[in-house]
Length: 92
Length: 139
Image (tube, rainbow over all chains, first blue to last red; front, side, top):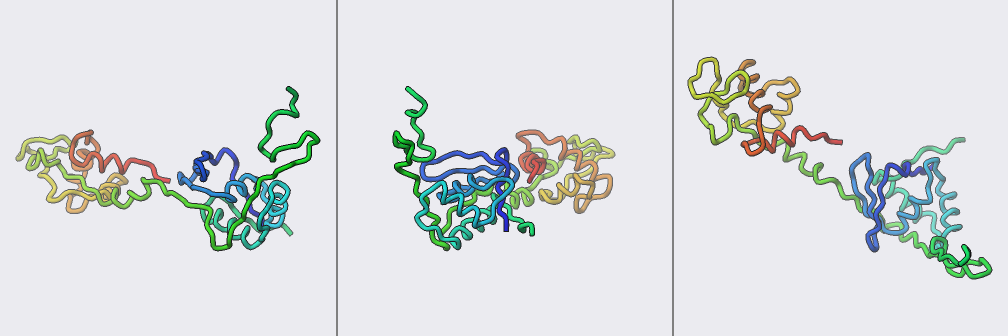
């Protein structure tokens, strides 16, 4: 499964202390994100990454306190449910 | 001041030899934890009430008056005009009428007069807010 972020122009970001408010223009819905959700969103590209590739990127960029693939899947599922991330089948 | 001395807190602090001394720690969290709260627009929450709000024809200040073909309010008994509707119309009913449907309990002619009246509603008149809400685009 490949996870894709929307184009940068589709979102408005505003840091609010511990939160990051993200306004999704097409749905008109505002989302309040806490880490690691904003970092995941920033690391994913429009072209998309697999979960494992995303985990590697996050590992490159951050000290991951818990590099648990299942936890990352849960975070991605949340972002998909919120409509901030889309998923598509990986090409064979 | 050289570029190398410029503060760079994007990828952690760099020592003079370029080796990162501190990287940002990220916690993915428990599988059951939640990192996203979605705030739906107030308009979406009020969609229900928009469809059930009411538009009296005519408004209470002119109750008993008749409605002419063009939607203007005329004295009761005016020839060719229609008596007030027996009850206010719901937002949903008006929305359908504006889309070419017919208000309940009306004839083709009185429906046209009532819809013209509703289209002419202005700020401050009873039912205007309900009518204006029906015009708002929804995603």
